[in-house]
Image 1 (cartoon, rainbow, N blue to C red):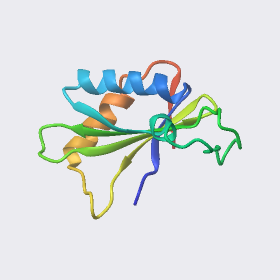
Image 2 (cartoon, rainbow, N blue to C red):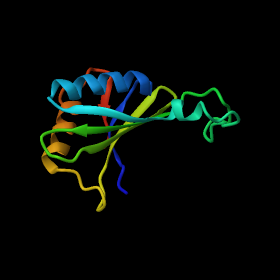
Image 3 (cartoon, rainbow, N blue to C red):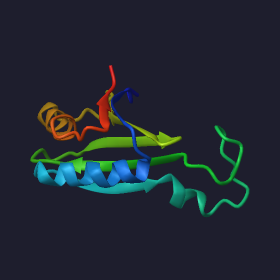
Image 4 (tube, rainbow, N blue to C red):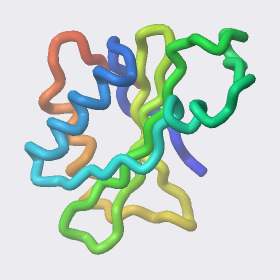
Length: 121
C-alpha cells in the first residue's frame, strides 16, 4: 500500500485534524472519521508507545474516509507525533481512489495552507 505523505503540518495531529476537516468541508468534500488511535488505545491498559516507550505520548493516527461526487471514498491518513503531523492518501490496487477526488483533496489541503503548514517533497 502506498501511504507516502504529501503534506507535513507543524502542529499536533488533533489540531491538524480540525484544520483538515474544515478545509475539506469548504471544498465540498465530506470527511468521515473512521479511526482514532487515542480512542483505540483506551481499551488497552498496558499499551506503551513503541516510539516513546511510555503510555503518555502524543503519537496519534486518524483515518478519514473522504467522499466527493464519486461513489467511492478516498482514505486520508493523518499521523503525528512530537508536534508534527503527516498527511497521506492510501492508494493501492485494492483501493484505487478516483483521480478527481484525490486531486480535490490535495488541492483543498495544499492551496489553503496557513503559514505554519509546509508541503513535503
